[in-house]
Image 1 (cartoon, rainbow, N blue to C red):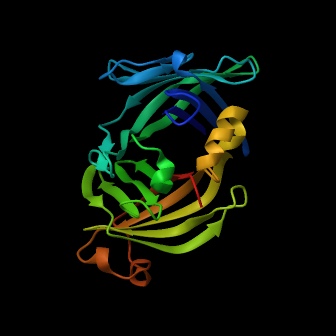
Image 2: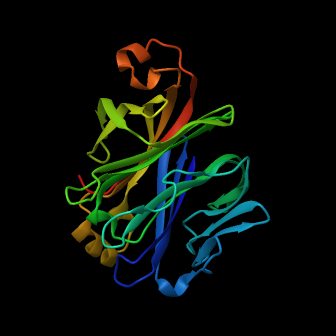
Image 3: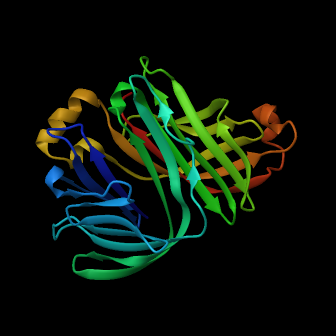
Length: 304
């Protein structure tokens, strides 16, 4: 598994701080590399998708997304990928969600599922890559610590079936304490979408790496569907402050008490029959689901 994160932020010593993180899970071993750069290395064109961060590229050309990672250090991987989407993306937040004082947040999945090809070079050894990829983003114009404790993204797409969640859990001062948007698909058709009406954390588990308690079995109630997500196992993660410079670490510690990124493999079951969105979990758990499929769950943890 390879997770690549591009970041652009005004929170730091100067404006337009940017960087790239790589999380590689291979043979049960997790490796993380993070590099940060200043505003002089950032290149972007307003109205055009993508940007350049030092020697790292994210761009869109002729119907394909291209990712090129070269952190300028021989000890870190060089990765090149081409993503050919199987279909259109999904808007989870359905446009910017307004906060206060002109602030907004937005989360979407521009690439639900794509054929990915490319290669990775590590320790002077080149390995060809071929598999399935996706792409999601979080975008806002206010420091996240002022309104959010955590973000949670779920993405799943398997043979036309899918469950996608984007949401944040707010601080006591946030205008909205919890806001979660979701979409459910079966056979390539949209069954339900919109704001999640209710979330039931049926079972939780302790993540020893981060010290956070993470939902292990969760039921999302929407307008037409009830969807269960079960995190099966922890696939990898990293402590954000351990992979950045001393200067930026000192700045971020003022705002972020325990910033972690955690990835889980999960399984999804959706019930979308008449009245099933309102049925208690004890009844749903013994009913054949409308659809079931594997998924991936990512927690962006900011403050306890």
